[in-house]
Length: 544
Image 1 (tube, rainbow, N blue to C red):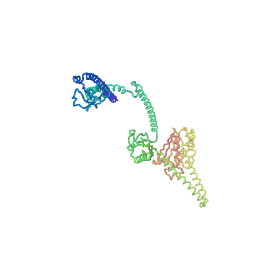
Image 2 (image 1 turned 30 degrees about the horizontal axis):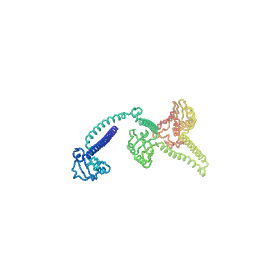
Image 3 (image 1 turned 90 degrees about the horizontal axis):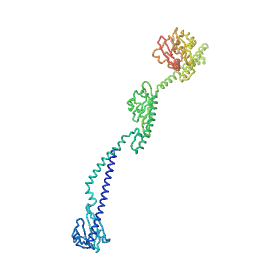
Image 4 (image 1 turned 90 degrees about the vertical axis):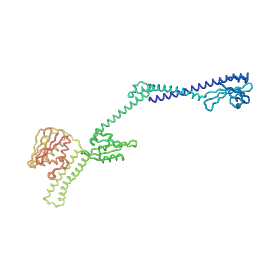
């Protein structure tokens, strides 16, 4: 800005100087020309008077160093000239000033030399006898005058320009210095030129608008950060080149990276070809998909292209943990297969016995045995259906009425129910500990304890024991049975899972008892612990 003010000031000074010189020289030149013309007329008047009184005698005695006097006859012939021989001079009748004098009595003319550096002024007057007396003088032209004054003009111009440059520089600095010291962060606190006050007010309004917009943007960014940081899903934003713009904590854990990955290519932190194809599909087709196994979990990746005004600006990568869903699908498939198998087995027994009775192939004395088999298999089928319904209720998370349940009293009830079956297996049941109350669903807790004790009896040895211990908010069922091998301990709570299928079939169980126990314990927000030694027995503890 300083240089612009400097150049503008100097330019104006030079223009003003040149214009001033031109005007002054033009006015002076015109003034001096008029003075000189007037002098010529005065001199001509004297010459006319002298010539009319004394004729040639007067003209011959005139000393005319600065002027030239010419006397022309009525036909244009030169009668006398102070600077040339009139006998050899050409006829002057066609001269402008002579012709004008013959016509009007006076005449004037100005003629410039071929070099344009000199011009001649002419004044003519007609005498009483009809002849014309002319006087002339030479004068430098304006162009010659300018050439003659060139060096003085250059000197004056140089001095003027130099002074203008000096003053312009100082003035520019003086003008710009307050502008350089402007506090644009607080524009209204500046106290300088009144002319820029509207600009400062506009800057103040813009600052306020920018501050409001920045506050809104920051608020939106904080909201986005809070939302994405608490997302269980993995979220990654990519630009059009596949570089990471944003990544939430869940995605950092998934890709095992840190915050310094921002700005890097996604393919540098994950080189899986399926992910590469999914990103390219999203950029080319708008959507991309991939299913990958990471850190022992299964993830579904959904990628969507982001466009603005028809231009691709990036890709959104959203990853869902589908491990539980896949496990649930697997469990559902296994459950369906097991249910089909478990339902088919008693139904086949019922159908087979019924067909024998219907066909008459069974002896009359064997009929009660077949009828008893049908009743036994039907009862097993009903028990299986009831267990499946209970598991469905627990899976759906149906809310059931809760009450205070005394676990020691509940143990006494279960013992009374199972004493007959325990006696048949030659197994004793004992209860120890102190009673305590829990808030829960009585029927569910009773069924849990019943299933644990029923299994302890079924998988016990003749003369074995089943002990129920209630103390310190713990319910423990221990037996002296066959135990559970270590390789099966992680799976015995799965539906229809049996350690020894032949023994389980003989015992008549549905294979759902321990699965019901696990779900009931989870429903009451308790923990279950299993300890077992093959050949020595099993202990299951529920911690409320």
